[in-house]
Length: 551
Image 1 (cartoon, rainbow, N blue to C red):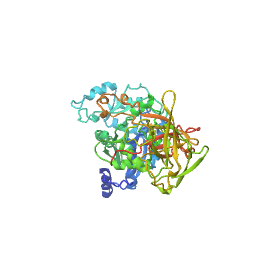
Image 2: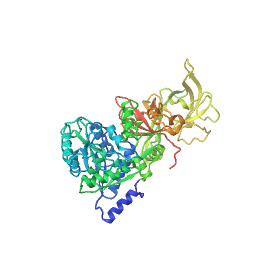
Image 3: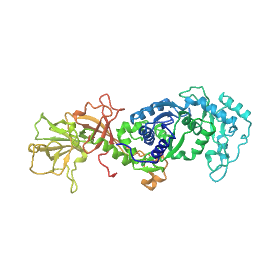
Image 4: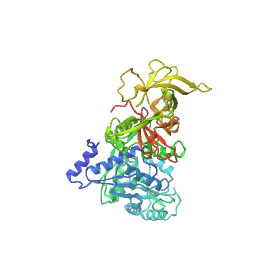
């Protein structure tokens, strides 16, 4: 599915190339390595790499690693893996930390031009002095230090003479500006911490709002694409590029971020879920991280097609998560094998089937894609069906198995329930049934008809498997009035995972991690790469078989 639909960013790029403003476009994807990427980042990846590919430009992968207190090489490696898995290759790999000396020199330039000063106010005091949306800020008492004193203090900051938070470097812009971002923003702070890339070489680090425009300019980025929350920072972005006298002048463009229903789109909150043990790591299949979606069984094609469909706009909005699931189904339905799996087993003994006999039945691997061929399914006297497919006292119009009723077994025969076996607590533990050998599927039997068709797994060759079913991890505020008043962690769904022990067909014994299947009547499933091994097979439900969502 190609993304050839018009959007305002593509139109801007077309105009810039046609006018000769740029000979070649350069975009960048600039994550901070302080967590794993999520589905919202996928939209940005697909946009930045996609427009560059379309217009024969280049895309840099750049790590905005200006905060050593939160960043880690683990996150760097996971981000690289996610970008590649989504199907993209960067033209250049950069780190903001590669430019620390250049950024320091540009800060010194600002001081020499009288456009930056060292401030001794605390973070709380700076916040108090900044003012509000309706009230102007007021000048710091240190705002008018001499250039010589600021140069000396800034060098001493670099040399490690001051404690964390003791001093900062601020841009000198306008404390009465209606845009709070221009009220002398902090552009350097002290952080005595080991950096993943530069070690202990630096103890002062540039703030993102100062570093980011410099990085874009150094790399010759032409179109700096970011989400709408950075729109108010664009004047500061332009101020930094102009006053630091950068040779290249990038332009920032903002687009609406991706929000999904029942989904957290904050790395800080996702990290909280990980750190407090609500999930099994960043790649838990319930997480909206790209690694979590990959482990659950989502495909890069489905994510790309979803992002292309929702498009690029100038407004934020929330998309129903069922729309993403729709694209997963559309991508998988012709690709993956069909199979039968019983996830809540109930044993059935077919009393008139010959003891010790096992016959092989033939079925298509995927009826919607005949080119995938056929598979062999064993059938014998003992099978498993779903507990949900039997009721001792059924309501009207219940067409599955109950005492005296006849149903078809998928790919096999008609069976009729003759006897119900219970344990001492009254729980149904086994059904005794008879079968009609004349009703074998594929033989052209045209006698009586039955209304119910059940899936099953032959018992003696069945492969034990753990099956994990998922519900949204976070309950949306809109679902009921109670949730509206709850904090983020109070809206974590206590029923987001259900773990079942079931059986699958014997040809599933050799499955590999990330193999995908459609389980008859249950949906699409993926072999979990983290938990499968040493004789254990774990399947994650990717999506249910059907949805009410209409595109």
